[in-house]
Image 1 (cartoon, one colour):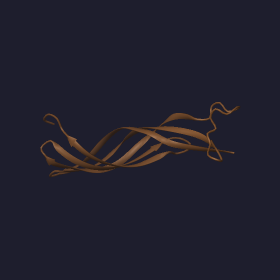
Image 2: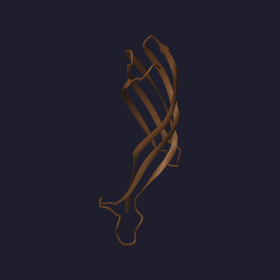
Image 3: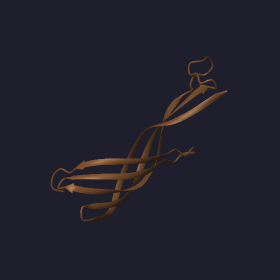
Image 4: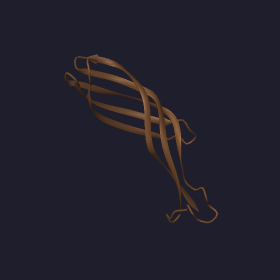
Amino acid sequence: MFNASTSITSVSTARARAGYAQDNWLFYVTGGAAILGAKTDLTTAAGGPVCGTVGILNCSGTSRRVGAALGGGVEYAFAPNWSLKAEYLYIAAASLELSHVNEFRLGLNYRFGGF
């Protein structure tokens, strides 16, 4: 008997955001494409590795899944070029075994130039 486990090893997104600015605050929604990297391993029921045993040559692997990222956040400009943000993202892969990630981010931004 074997156990298969899959873990998400990487997450990449390309997103746009749109929002409402009031004073130094920006409230926004974000969305776009996502790519999730996944790794699958097989182990025996006792927890030992299966790879390399006789008769089983290809027992682990990596793959990429394409999906979508949706979320929202708030950003506060506390100085002329500096801002803090808090953001939530739901990232889901479009595949038969729907993989997803709930991600919370905190950020410190610095804007260069006169944008």
